[in-house]
Length: 164
Image (cartoon, rainbow, N blue to C red; front, side, top):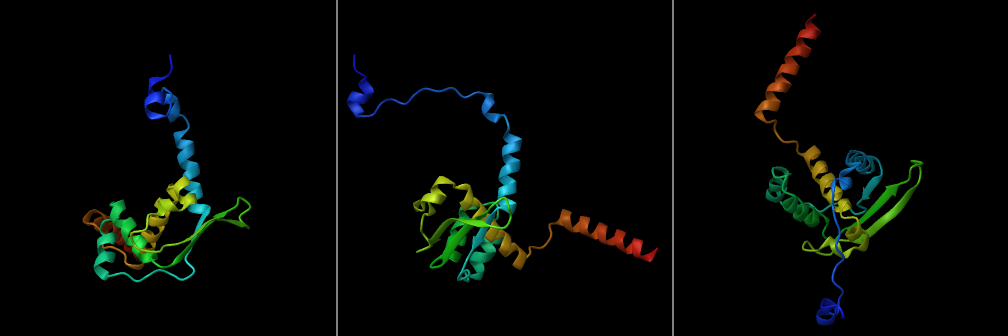
């Protein structure tokens, strides 16, 4: 008897598979490797710089850094009409390899259309994270009350050490 799914849809039915806890083995090692690549191997280059965006949009992004969609939209607006190059630094730390080169044509552009980014979407996350980090360095946010009290305590300790 012929497979009914293939006859009706023209496609074979998907293979069954089982997932167990073995997929979680090595998660810590994978995370460490991913973080090392993010911190030391990926280089984003903006030959024509970034667009200046509205102050309100910038503020909205800076106060909503945990909202990826908002940050993504703001970053794409900052890149609109600008070329972007992404390099990967080789393990010899001397040479780089061009990973992707593209131009953001409009602020609604879907970066999935770029084959390299579609294959490795984590690079898009890092691009957004790096640009948001750059903006946070330019416009640091005021300390939260808990961080402010910790900074004040540390400041008092350093003054006491200087007095001795």
